[in-house]
Amino acid sequence: MQLRILLFAGIRELADADSVTIDVDDNANAADVLSAIERVLPQAAPLIHVSRLAIDGQYVAADHPVSPTADEFALIPPVSGG
Amino acid sequence: MQLRILLFAGIRELADADSVTIDVDDNANAADVLSAIERVLPQAAPLIHVSRLAIDGQYVAADHPVSPTADEFALIPPVSGG
Amino acid sequence: MIQIELVDSPIHLADWESSLHDVDTGAHAWFAGVTRRTTADGSGGVQITQTLHYEAHRPMAIDQLQQLAQQARRQHSLTGVVIVHRLGEVSLGQASVLVGCSSPHRIDVFAALPWIMDRLKADVPIWKRETFADDSTQWVHPDAQ
Amino acid sequence: MIQIELVDSPIHLADWESSLHDVDTGAHAWFAGVTRRTTADGSGGVQITQTLHYEAHRPMAIDQLQQLAQQARRQHSLTGVVIVHRLGEVSLGQASVLVGCSSPHRIDVFAALPWIMDRLKADVPIWKRETFADDSTQWVHPDAQ
Image 1 (cartoon, rainbow over the protein chains, first blue to last red):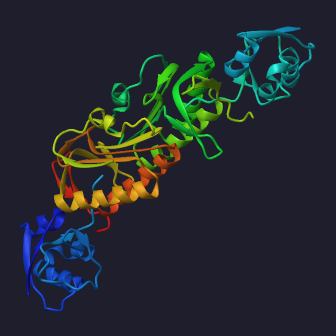
Image 2 (image 1 turned 120 degrees about the horizontal axis):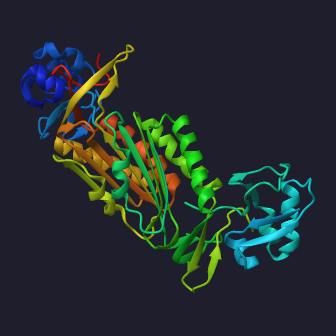
């Protein structure tokens, strides 16, 4: 399945794009999604490695299954608000 | 020697006076001063018992010697600011 | 910067906020103690406060506040300390005390605020008299029975 | 009462102070994180910041802030929680974040403020980009090398 992933901050800057589209297996989990993003954005690999996936605004664990029916996928690099 | 002791809050109210004058020996310490105040204000004894003496704006320990040359003696009952 | 004041009119945080401004100070924290309507009476009931009145040994209170502000600044690497205590009548919902501090790092201001309030409540010669809903009054002397 | 906002203009504590007012709430505490000019660079030197820029995943940030405010209220017996985060350019000396909380007792607000700030800095999808004195810029991603 194809997923569109929102990008932010340092990763958005390295990708020079607000989002990226990746292909993953139908039974992919969050870790597979992160690996797929790393393959299309190798220049951001170190940052992607410490990022979390959020599905519909909630962080998900690495083994969380990915459903194509979700509304939004976001790649959240380490945050620095405050 | 004669000392004038400033009174505050609940003790001032029980004494119905802003200050009280006591007589103590020339070699008296702070504990002797508290005892002398208790004798002239028996109605405030429980509060005096938990009060501290301040000399010239600083708390003093029970064995602190009392000098008649100090400018101010104050009886400080338990505080409740904040 | 240390600023200590005893005031006889309402305390508004907005009037003091700028005291702590400094471009090298990243963390500002404020505590306001506000007159509450209800206090647990220690036996399961609730006392209803109508108003509070604060009295101080003014020069000694200023002196003690100055000393504890200096100690707080030293111990917690603070840039600024502001302590304002109101005296006289304080209506429900109004602040009786305002403490502010600033530091390059937030851990220091978070440690300093409770330290300052604990010391203030233990050592600074200020007393409150409660007036309850039935017009009875009582001086508050925490360690006395 | 929980109030969460992401704002694009300067945060003034005075504008938010009244949010926490409540006659049954004796303790109010505020934390403001303010843009600092200098940051230790980790090797004994100092970096001079010219300005900061904050970006957020807005709907998710609001959602995460709402969740952590609710959890803080529950865990620390708070009456009110206010969290305001600024986005966009934030000049030196201006607040990037303001957190306020109220409770009947001060121990709870003193515990809640650092808890909220720690959680905010760990989980809320907001990022800052530093612009240094030499006009170079850098996104800040704390756990990355």
